Length: 292
Image 1 (cartoon, one colour):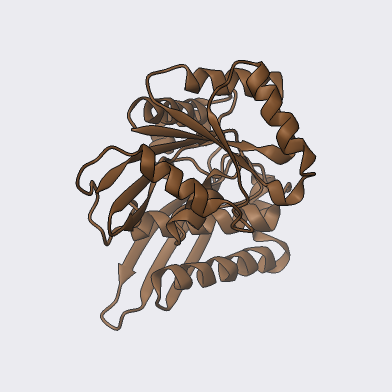
Image 2 (image 1 turned 135 degrees about the vertical axis):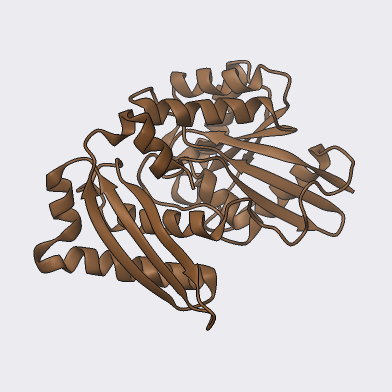
């Protein structure tokens, strides 16, 4: 039996959450084209008869901009020190810059072994893979590199088998019926935030948070969810609500469908929008919005 923790680290939008969702086989992290989609380190657990891989999805790596991003970067760096293996996820479609080289060296220079998942190979010229591998080698990076496509499931099983071989021998570290350490309440908030990011694209900056006011499962098996969408400016609130409330109705319906799929039950969803200016720099508000 082999089991262990794998820290999944990389830049924003490198494909970390998508890769974990595909490998685990269930949705344990939200996905959108925007930065700061993942704000917490979320466990995704893949359990088989003779091995268990516990993925720790971390926030994407950013420059410090406010207290929220500082918290996110601390979560990433803390994860890198407390796992059995690091899987650095790099967006192959974006090429490799000097900053990427520095970042990879930062996480590969410690005591924790590391490999690179070179993602999105389905949307890039194949000749670039060998060229980028050469760039890594010339810069003294000796990690194993796995070109993968989560969307097309290319080389995913090969990467899984590789990770299993790198895990220490030992019993399962997580109960085998668990696929994530996050509660249903947390995931419902994340689903709401995901749908907002997907619907509004560049109209709303990523300073949107979700506060769950009520999350209740009724005797008949249905759920009642009451939540606040917190934004930073009055004009953001106007965009979120939309003309005659059409935008908030549409995104709420979109989110409710996602929640029902996740929970496997009917959801009665009530949403409100409120403004909390500069909440990402206000520790008290970050605590209310950022945690369960």
